Length: 319
Image (cartoon, rainbow, N blue to C red; front, side, top):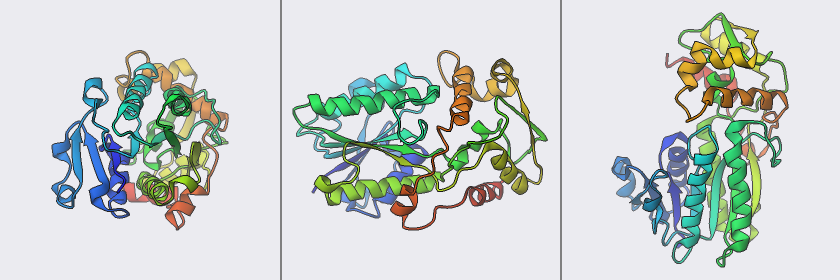
């Protein structure tokens, strides 16, 4: 019985993937690896789930942690910057290659920049993902164990809208938002995080059912929402549920980067200049990198994905 490890088994996406996966396969096949395995709910370990301890920031903890694992679901390191993030991913992949008897397949959670799975993006947040995808392509060729991979370019979370809308706050809606973008197309194919987790778990299940016939073997695949919303349309939807529509005040990069709100939200998210790094995402959106709507999410879920407006309506009800 093939063992599946999720690392790190924490955070919104990682938790969503494993909770859905536990309804799809035998829990005794699942290994949850995290910095604090004691925080994994006992209801899962009581069903036979195995827990192990490791974290990205302690490379030594990765040694042998993937032993007896056949499939590794590698959740990306949460950061905007490139060097440390890619180094963390590489260490985990190398540990998977070195494991005994050896991980055979890595499913990596990438991000939906770069259009329809191209290897190029102007968004700084995407650079470590691109490097990791590239490393997965080459490491399998060099490994005696013939490691295969699937990189899932997870759609931009509907719940992450503040980062792309001048930090619009549903609980305290502003009349104006500042951003280095005029709000027009191409836009973003928003996807609900919980549904991305469910669909990603379904991908794991499909691989386990037929590894040799798996449709995404050694592929980068897109898991974005079924509809593209430009930023102006996104703000309109937010305004309707918040009761106040915000106008866009387009500003230059320097003003955006140095704005007190930008610094308050992003200033601590990296070692260099995370606010400036994040500003590159608006250029990526402007170039259409996030505007590719994919049918994969609907096909894997077996139903129509939740509309962005419905997701934010539910979020607003919590304020």
